[in-house]
Structures are given as C-alpha cells and as structure tokens.
Amino acid sequence: MKDKIVVALGGNALGNTPEEQIQAVRHTAKPIVDLIADGHEVIIAHGNGPQVGMINLAMDVASKSSAATPEMPFPECGAMSQGYIGYHLQNAIREELLERDMQIPVATVVTQVIVDKNDSAFENPTKPVGAFYSKEEAEKLMTEKGFVMKEDAGRGYRRVVASPLPIDVAEKETIKTLVDNNQVVIAVGGGGIPVYAEGNKLIGIPAVIDKDFASAKLAEILDADYLIILTAVEQVAINFGKENEQWLSTLTINEAEKYIEEGHFAPGSMLPKVKAAISFAESKEGRKALITSLEKASAGIAGQTGTRIVK
Ligand SMILES: Nc1ncnc2c1ncn2[C@@H]1O[C@H](COP(=O)(O)OP(=O)(O)O)[C@@H](O)[C@H]1O
Ligand SMILES: NC(=O)OP(=O)(O)O
Image (tube, rainbow, N blue to C red):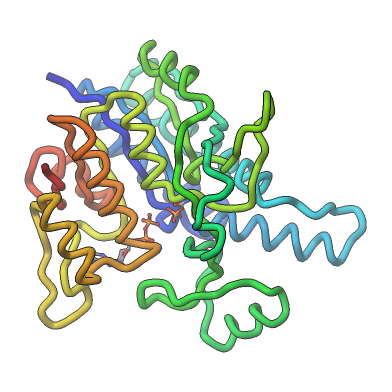
C-alpha cells in the first residue's frame, strides 16, 4: 500500500542566494518526485532559518538607511520566506514532474500556524536564524542590533529568536482538499507564520516555529503514515562529533527520550527533529518517522539507511 508522506526539508540545505537556492531545489525535487512516481501522496514542508534571518536583516538595514523602505515585522518576513522558497520549490517540482510526463499540479499554500501567545518560548529564544558568524562578529551584532546570538551545533554563532510550539494549522482544510485531489502541496513553510487568534482575526507574532514540529503537526492533521525529515546527515548519532560517535538505524521512543536526557542532540538542530519524530510516531499506531539526508530519501524509505523512530 502506498503511503501519505509529509517530507520536511531543512532550510540550511537551500543555499544562501537565489541562484544557490534554484540549484538546491532542482536537486531536492528529484527524490521528492521519485516518491510521487512510486505512488505516494507527498506533502512538502520546509525550513526557513537562514532565509527569514536574511530577509529580516536586509529589511532592517534598508529601513535604517532609506525612508523609502519600511520596517518589516517578523511575521511578514516569514510570509516572504514562504513565497521565496515556495516559488523556487514548486517550479522545480513542476519541472521534474513534467520531465517524467507527470501532469500533477503543484502549489504553495501561504500557511499560518496557531501558537499560544503566552508560550514560555517567548521568554527564551532558541531558534537559529540567518547566517553563521564568528564569536567576534556575533558580539558586535549583539551590541549594535540587540540580537540574541548563540553557538549553533559547532558551526558558528547565529541569531536566535523565540520558537513557540505549533498548536494548529489555520489553512488545514485547504491543504487537505488539495491533497485529497492528488495535488502536490508545499505547506507550513518555515514552520508556518506564527499567529494567535483574537476574535475573527489571526494576529502575527514575531517568532520562527520549528519546521520539524510544524511538519509533525501537519502530518498528524492530515493523518499521514510517514514523517520524513531530510537534513544534512544520513543518520542521527549519539556522541555526535566525538571519537565514540555512533550512528543509529533505529531509535525506539524510550531510547530517544533517554538520549535526549543525556544531551546527545543539539538544541536548535537535531533535538527538534528527534522530538518531532517522537511526537508523530507516538501519536497513533502505525505512524512512522524517519530522519535521513535528501540523497538517501529513497533508500531510507526502503529501509536501507536513515534513522527510524519507532514506538
Ligand atoms: N546527534 C546528532 N546526530 C546527527 N547530527 C547532529 C546531531 N546533533 C547535531 N547535529 C547536527 O544537526 C544538523 C541538522 O540540523 P540543521 O542543519 O539545523 O537542520 P535543517 O536541515 O533542518 O536546517 C546536522 O547536519 C548535524 O550537523
Ligand atoms: N523554521 C525552521 O525550522 O527552519 P530551519 O529548518 O531552517 O531551521
């Protein structure tokens, strides 16, 4: 039987410029279309950490140097990042489908995700956005711009912003309708634009939702069979980057929770992926979660690699 699969793509694999992003999504489209060609229903979610940070910083710099450029609130930057990434991704998937003579519509849904405006995450920013900086550059940005900067998984310093948990997806009925009609949907880009409800209004709130958590939430809402989190590493490791590093093929929920307690997964990078995989795998009997690299997506589904998180 074919599966309904939510594929979550890492924002760090999308490159730093429009040209790099176009190249990256061409590469990304192939394993995604392989899954579609195999008959699976595929819903795509993606990160936006580097991109939303870049957009926000660019708008900030421009607004301070020219009266013609307004200050751009963070939720609007999130919406821009969904459009920017969705535009390239939907075209790359469309082209790849057409090259294989598959006439399937592809669209990006600008997606808002409901959060709790009193989420404790607003007191403690953890989500890395934007570029990587040296320690000295980070200290300068902290002083000059008031950013909170933290070290990101041994790769350098990055700005961090609040990252509340996703509660619901505002456009879920639209997404379901498209999926049920065999259309390829890109949704909850960048974890979704964080909003809270006030009467009939949805109000944007400055934050970046983790796309791994938002993807797990979307996968639950759509009653998906599979959550596949694609990132830069083929498998999850314990003692990552150390001499006794050990790559894992299977991770039970109990083991994963023990390794989380022991601090094996870096916050802001691997930790949310493992937590999102746990929350999806334990949400209903039969649901599966896999963490692997883009290149290994097909082999991962075939059970040949990746880290499978099971009940
Ligand atoms: N225990 C771990 N096992 C594997 N990778 C880890 C681990 N802890 C941290 N990482 C790092 O997390 C990265 C994935 O996170 P990140 O790049 O933030 O994700 P995304 O692909 O969503 O942008 C990996 O490339 C790796 O460098
Ligand atoms: N929003 C989000 O989780 O982005 P990254 O995947 O780029 O961290």
